Length: 384
Ligand code: TRP
Image 1 (tube, protein in one colour):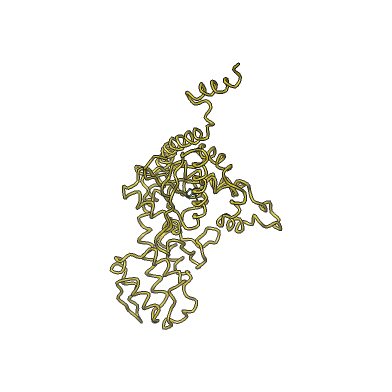
Image 2: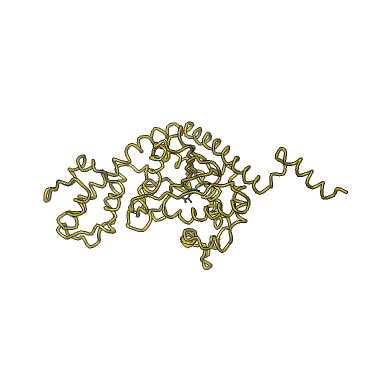
């Protein structure tokens, strides 16, 4: 596409409230990008149609969570004056694009997608022994990487800020764009992925230290959790199982408290929450996370201290988000108006792309001017 605009598209499935893994993995970055003023257009999608690909029997869950995700977005700082927040299912152009892209992707290629493979396993789709009717993979679910390529290309996105697990979807999208443009002509833009630059943010573990924060594992801290809920969850967090006595040297690698600090701690937190490190038995003055880590490794520092500090750091980040959420919860007509307007703008953009796609594929038979030429062309076959 000749278009040199800088366009962001990304989104989330509305299957629950957003948690701090979503926040450091993508949401915080989106807000920064939005406020940088460097982008011409921004689209953030509530991917309800994608959520339905493995929730066909529970559409109500998806429906209920659209507003939760919208509230999380707005309270985290997405600004409708700069960002279009849209509901995927209300942009039917996306489904139409998906259908044409399906012809450019093989079943074998889809079967190699590592994220889809892992998700199929987690959901038991591969398990022929499973007694419930979940065994077997819904075709729509299997094809969602293609639908995601439609999401991204419909807006001619140049940048897609997402977590690491979305890398295979971006690769698939780029392949579809190349295939489309070389087969039919350049109607689509090849997007770049933008991953978090900090290793802790790339894949924030759950509070139990398990690889990924996920609602089904019950190891999440939600953006909307109260200060007290955060305190309780941090108190129960996985640290270093070998750190039994305060005097013992502790491990920082693989210690979830430190991973979270890597993701959330800022230099000013040491001045503001330094009291956390003043205990009855031991008292420390720290100016950086590196100093805390060095002391923890050396021994003499208890988990309670670092957990208290982490609680303060997390609540410092989450408090303004919670406050905005409480206000927005009392003004749902405004929130739905944001969604309606964002979806309307998104639809106009997607319709433009779809028209270009159909033009490139020459399946725009009834477009003005096209029909006359088509009649002339076909009539020539039968003339004389
Ligand atoms: N697959 C993404 C997730 O599970 C959600 C999503 C749908 C998305 N469409 C997208 C992300 C387009 C980025 C771009 O979180």
